[in-house]
Length: 113
Length: 117
Image 1 (cartoon, rainbow over the protein chains, first blue to last red):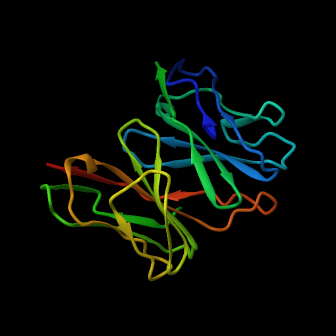
Image 2 (image 1 turned 120 degrees about the vertical axis):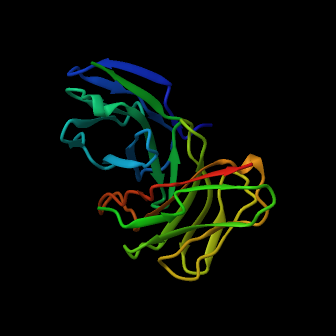
């Protein structure tokens, strides 16, 4: 079974609008971490946001927020006020046991002017 | 600002050549990882290390080998490159991550794009 599932291969959003990128995860551990990374066309991986399994509040970092629904095992990324520079691949990832990281297949986001 | 470096950034070589992709980090992280990624595709873990003299193979079978003689250095070697090895290779490191203590996110290098002709 896939540890991380991203069901949206590609998404489009109008500039200045908000967009939600979906991510569901599968684990039987009580302690785990959830991450989102951005990968522009240049290829580097940029860390965006983190949510720990014990955190009761949704994580936020500037225009990024993580909609964490533990019972549904979902960790969707919300980008508010989209900018042209947000066009990139976005990867959801999970850490189990403090060591092992699992990545999803990614979502390609295109921001339309 | 992450301090993890990969060289070379780009490499074009012929079939059968031996290559080493270098990865160094100055953050003192014990855990280091190599991922293989085709353009626009998911990341596949090929090797990881939890400390000096510790290396393990990842989920994706790979003909490459790694070594971890020093904490800061985690090179990846292909003894005989083939066109099927054409890909991007991403090195990453992290400190110990505990969901009770904080983030412990992966820091990535800029990647090495390998083309084997």
